[in-house]
Length: 130
Image 1 (cartoon, rainbow, N blue to C red):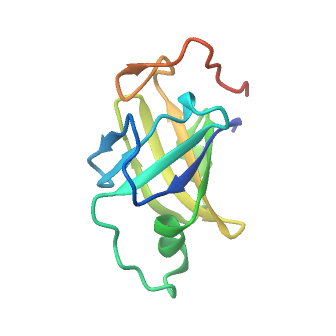
Image 2: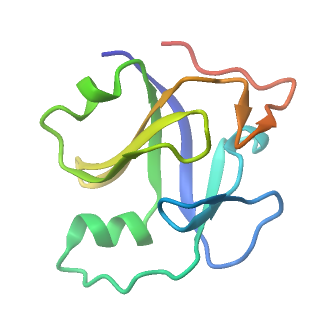
C-alpha cells in the first residue's frame, strides 16, 4: 500500500467560508487545498455528546486528524480499528477514519483528484507523490 500526506483536519464550531456539506457524517468541511498548510476545518451539524470513555469516537469529534491519500483503501483498512466509513464524502472517492497510535487518521482513496466537492482545485495545488 502506498500513502501520501493529504491534510490536517481541525474541528470547529464556527462557520468558515467555502464550506461543503458531507451528508454521511453530517458535517461541513472546508477545502484543505485552499489553505497554505493544508488545513481542513470540520463543523458538525449537531456535535454528538460522546463520553470520553469511548476514546476513539470521542477523539474523532473533538481532536484533529491527519489524512493520507492511499492507493488501496481496502488494504489500508485491513486489521485497523475503523471508527467511521468507508464512505464517499463528495463525489471524488472513498474515505474512512481509524484510531491508530493514539490519533485519528483518515485514509482517502481518490477516484478524481481534479476537484473537491465539485469545485476545481486551486491552480497551484499539487498532490503529494506516493
